[in-house]
Length: 451
Image (cartoon, rainbow, N blue to C red; front, top):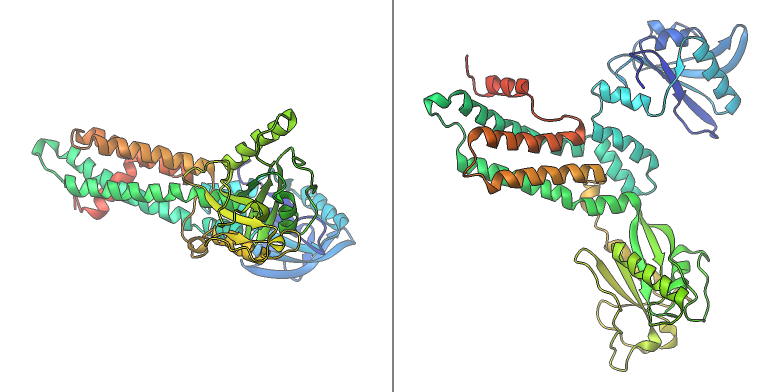
């Protein structure tokens, strides 16, 4: 992908808007622009962080009046000289400016190349680079907050703190190896174990946050389950405020899982309307029920929808017909309460009429309460990529191996286990394992050896 620091160009905004931005980056970005941009002064003479009015010209022909924003290396997104041309959003104007910049010495950027250059220049680590794509794709307040926090480095900062602690431990153990003939112990074993256990708790906390992060990124999966004719499809249509599912009084109408999504107070929910669960001899309906049970297993939350006419005189709720795993949440919702207005419901059970809309606001509130995003909105690190989860799991496994054999491991093998933990964590941000040079710098700067 990379061609040293040659100048690249690409639109930085989506097509169809009133205005567009075209970005150039590379050693000759300013010179390339000056070949087609005519302003009061050449951009090559401009200071960084300045905006200049001018025209894009082809000979004597004016293409558009534009604003050119100048960013000088290393203080730009890519760490290179960069120019952003703000022009009118006409597809013709954009294509003409792209054509002229390429004729002037630039080339079209490959997908993701600006962010690759930012990473190689040290402007972003790998986790932050991934967050750029997440931020662009974010479709809710929570997803935006998740990507924004990660892109600003909040998540990377947590990983760097863990890495610094591991570097400190590795440096202590390296000192012991260097002074092994003198039988000097730099690392107190009890303090070392406590630090490793503390790091392990931090890693496990990040791993646990994946359930929230993945749900926010992909949408919080909610299965609407219950017996036939409980009103599941009617409820789905009401929640979406649209007729997306076929509604019928005939039991077993829904034969497959219908998935739709909506935004509730800044969080995207993916609703799965499932086939009614019952014993049946209908092969197609039975296949739908099997898919229903599969969907229930992958949902974070299950709405157990019960028809009011199945509630006993004592207020007893029919059993759901499925089991939950420990990570899942359950909301019991009684539908068609308009048919039994005097029905008393147990605490925690929500009464609604999907047909009339009664109680839907209460259900919305209960659904939103099931997703605790306060920590995320406060800026706490939350893991949202399966690649990161895998790396954290590898780090946790290596750390547990070190702790399980802690008392019997010699110093050199314990140091290797710590390097394995660091390597796994470093793969998330691209920092990698601790190098010998880092250990030496840490030793000389913090321990004053060889002063």
